[in-house]
Length: 370
Image (cartoon, rainbow, N blue to C red; front, side, top):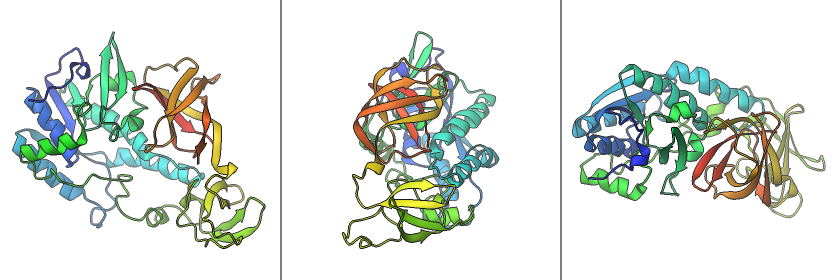
């Protein structure tokens, strides 16, 4: 039997655990592990999006069937709950506001804060749960009455970046069964116990967009606001249909060839002037407009419920990125801070999350400001 690390279990020793199940292999194996530990496990399938029930890109129906199949195999009760209204109000509306303002948000971070660890947590507690669990790759360490959020031992799958806005109250009764095992082992367990979804492909991208083209999706919800594409010298080299469809550092899909200045080099999105609906591009991956050693962040959220002291830490400014050494300087307001890096950071993108770490401990973070 695979043992859960005791540091991941609240001292109250919960007996009934409600686990979020998506139909994927991770949450399925996590549910089995909890059952093996002797917990009374209830699976909860969250439906957070309704607009595309009959769309080829929406897998909700199949995911629910997968959840039911897994629950039957491992012998647990399961129910479905619809959080679509909460998701649209708390996550999707903010997503559209940010894109309309020219920023690039990360809705998965907000979904964890507002849905998976708020609406879901509240619902689970109404069912009499002592704790909730998810298939996230992360760890929670309980010490001296507080909780630390730690990276997963499988660095390639660590998801603490997406969980950095969780509070002490939210983390107090959460289990992360997969935090100390590698993804390869998760798949082996799934095959060993006969889960039909053992080889199911991991979901990628933003949950409500699925595998559909991103621009196609945004076209349905945001108006087109065309404008010029210019070089930093002000030369018009093309046109665009809306700044919302572009993000800093973007190379593909700009609609420009590589011969505008005769060099043949690729173009990169370097800046967005929302007021004048202008997209600025450069023709060098290492152009100064794409590099930054310092930036500010707003809307800070700290796992310990208070900002860390100023000093040297590490940070991620996007999920798929190795930690970068940085200096942390808290602002005069608790909701703001600044980061400085000895090595230039590429394409620092307003709207994205800057997440601070002290070794394996995720301290929290904020939203990169323009």
